[in-house]
Length: 380
Image (cartoon, rainbow, N blue to C red; front, top):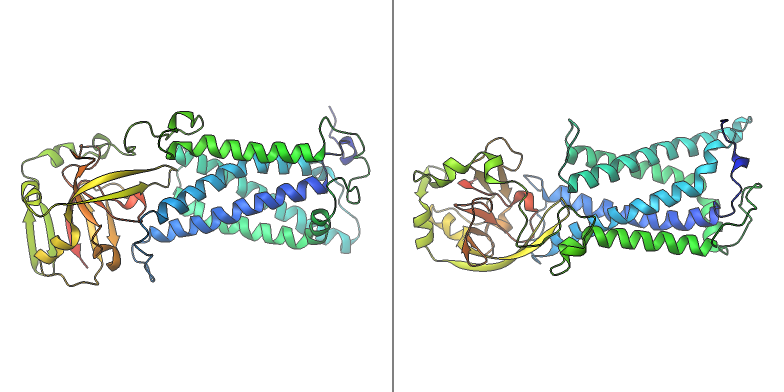
């Protein structure tokens, strides 16, 4: 076997016209994933300089759904894009410095863009599957690499902008920017390649995200988190190590404001005024579901200890070794009438895995921050 050259690839389907159009779709997917990913990252900050709105209650569900859809659709688009530009990998480097510099910038940006894109998409898929075969933090790494990918993409666009502009404004069959060796007809037309790329992206996204849509979860063949019955459970009470403490008769929920503390049993909570709210719960692992939650309004518990409005509230769990063991609610969430310390889900007592004896449920919050097995509420 010998190393191929650029002239080894003779199909006219591997063209700038195809690469530019698929790249445009891919760029749109990346932009949607970036914006919605930044929203999700910001929503998980303990202290938000400008708190996100508490409504509409499905806003986070919408943005997270768009994030997963865009990221999933980007996978086949990225593969088609790489297939279209693959011959460029074997293009010789110009000897003249004036020509070599743009080429070096282009190839360097492509190397960074391709590697970070592959890592982002692969780790995103594994995050949905809840399989973490690495020793680094997915959230912080995913966040940091997003900026690396965007920076490389901007450099790539700046270098290739003239060619991209002409390819997008010209006819799909225009050969002005074709490689000299690309003269062999393919098995389909260039439009056929675009149709196949678009159909693959839409189909993959649908099969991966249909699990979030009630009634069609069974066809979400690519989703390990498809919803068949009720609300999915990411972490069981057994894996969190809370079964004994949560089921103990000694359990108490402490509500603390300054020097004032109220200690409440679950029976005490059940004896208070009960409210019911229909709220979605959406997770960064790519699923969402809606339930009818019943329990005590958090604001009513804060009133028991004389807590003023407009204060941040930390909610702590019985579990201690997880990143989701506590969360900080911004003032607008803590004071919202829909924020509950839930005792009931869909008319039944919370199961142990859903957070018994009591869990937090608030509108427009990431699922990882809807703390289960709550043991302490502290006004900051």
